[in-house]
Length: 429
Length: 174
Image (cartoon, rainbow over all chains, first blue to last red; front, side, top):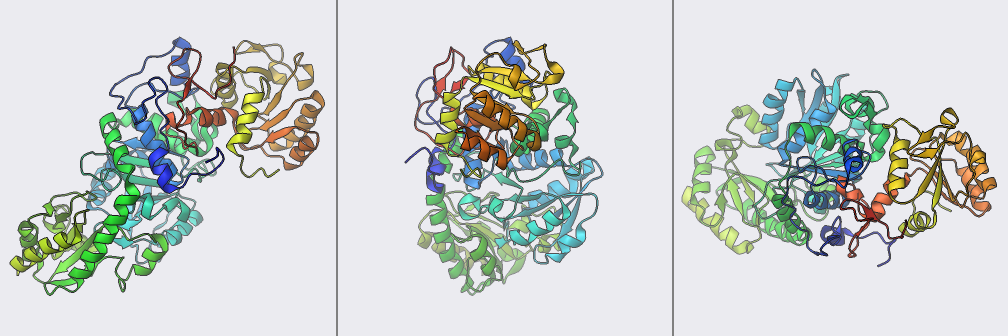
């Protein structure tokens, strides 16, 4: 290919960000397991600390293994730049810390990962960042929730745990009218199934721990800057538009333009809050990323088979998977996730809470644990685990009521996954 | 030519060909974007001559500042414009008169009419870009800050001048 050709998705998943190592020629990305990097001279050190030159200082701020992961995800999502963090929760903390001041509000749709609901309702409250809940199934509820204090709108592309698909285009129009950025958690979809920036997202956030890493071995998070938002227009985002005291009065948006948000997250958020990714985890997640499209295809293929089987099972009262024809989110899935609706979904048991507890205990191959997006199939009963801290009403609103079981379908043979579920369902009665 | 996007070949050929850059709007203030760009380009082997009437006669990063492009006593390959889009029009005409080969307008600076005049006179034009950022994208340094360079390569990055943390786009400079 010529220098001027634009590489396609599968090519980017393998090559973006990773030239051979300049000193050794190593072709795979080396694990730079070091805390710090020597300066060439005193002036070089000053340039790095003053943000005048690109370069590595300290692994709490950046590391060459991490950089490869960052550029690769930025390329796959179609963003201008990205920042890796210790976890998805760490990424969210940094995004909010960059955009909100005490007393500010943000709107989150209630169809969210239970961990995010906790983070928003309780931990962020301590910073006086105040969540206002809206409903992804009633788009007008988002518009109604906007006030002068609103600083961002937050949603998931495919929502955990119910596998619902969010109308990103409609929400991004509301965000644009309100003059606030749309932040989309794209963990369940991955950029292979959905690229929120193409639908108007200004910031994309990931837990890399899930499908992107894909093998259930490493924690990681990612922030992707779309480069599209004008942070200086109304002065509502002073971290980006006003002189920054810890960099001698530099204005970050003016200086860094389309990558200013990613830079601010790194040189203020990550520097001062500290949730950096380890080089080893970055390496393992890069390994996973290289087979992303192959894995997502098989994940989706297995999931539709399992979902179809369960929807006809006598112990099952309903299945919520947007990939199923007839599902209320099927149309949105075809629009936003044409390559598949992901591999996480929920189903309801006629036997309620008790049956849920029995099913997760009765499976033999499928693992009972609190994660998703692994090569292994995973099962959980949210109301007795991940969503236990929520009231029953909140559980139901989040799609995690007492009768709900969540599955994350792995890459085993679909017939074996189905056989294991059938056995557990039979035992649960 | 179409200025909505630039090919890697086009930007690379400009950054490889030019040696002396006149930077109009260069600042002595160490936190201004123009100071960043000037310092970076000098490190990459370019001679950067600052132009700024308010600083005329002073030095920035070891180079004498001139009041206007006309005052520069050396030959200039490229004029890098850190001024607003309107001012870029007059400056482009001055660059043509000066015999420069390239007019480069910084991020946020665009003057399509001036670009047409420069191209008619045989100059190459880049608008709404920063040469520091573009150099970083081509050398591989852009990714060090998580930036999406938009390119891939199986070629080893080229270290510059015995430094561990400086990559070159490949042209030998002293």
